Every structure is written in C-alpha cells, then in structure tokens.
Length: 141
Image 1 (cartoon, helix red, strand yellow):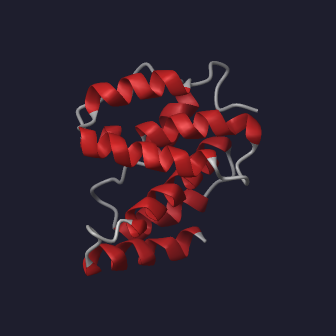
Image 2 (cartoon, rainbow, N blue to C red):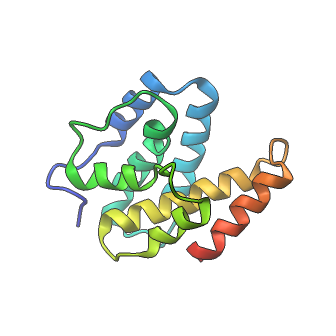
C-alpha cells in the first residue's frame, strides 16, 4: 500500500525541505517526522511516505514552494495540511477525518504529530495558541 505508484522518498523530502525552510522550521518539521516515524498505528507500508509528508508539511503554507511535480496523492495530502485562508482552524481540523483514503489518513497522522509538537513547546506556547490547538484537537481524536 502506497500513496502513489511512485513513492515519495524521505531523502527527496529532506532535500526539498532544506532548500526552503529556515533552520527553526526545519527543526520543527524533523520533530514532526520523528513523531510520525514512532507512531505504531501508521501501517508500516505507508510510514515512510508519512515521514516524507511530515518533513514537507509546512512548505506550501510557509514558503514559496510549489507542489507541482509531486506524485498526485502525496501532493493532495500535502495540500490537505495547508490551511485555506477562508476556513477557521476548527473547520480545517474537521476535514481530516472526512474520508478514509490513504492521502487523508497520512495527512491526519501528520497533523496529529504537528499538534503534538506545537503543544509540547511550552516556551513558545501562548494561551491563544494552546486554545487554538486544543480546540482543533477535539475534531481529530
């Protein structure tokens, strides 16, 4: 089971991420990827693609990276992780459990890991951010 015929390699995701992320964003992406790699609930044959997705999860939203050229389902999962401006954070979180396809499932697991990382960084976690993530988390669990 894979997202696409051509799987997204972790090494490729890392190379792309290093090109676009500033150091602090890269460190966040690597922590999220670590959480994903340790998640025993992710099917083994999807885990590497989920790790690659975790590494790239903020690229579209936070950099000038364009997702063209990526495998279709991987690109869809990456775009699912990009919050549209016209959705509230809660509405954005609700859509992760909308479908039971591999692209949605990978995006869901990465989003959970992303929230875990944000909530664990107590030195930068403001009350407003904590409320935002905890509110969105109720739609994911």
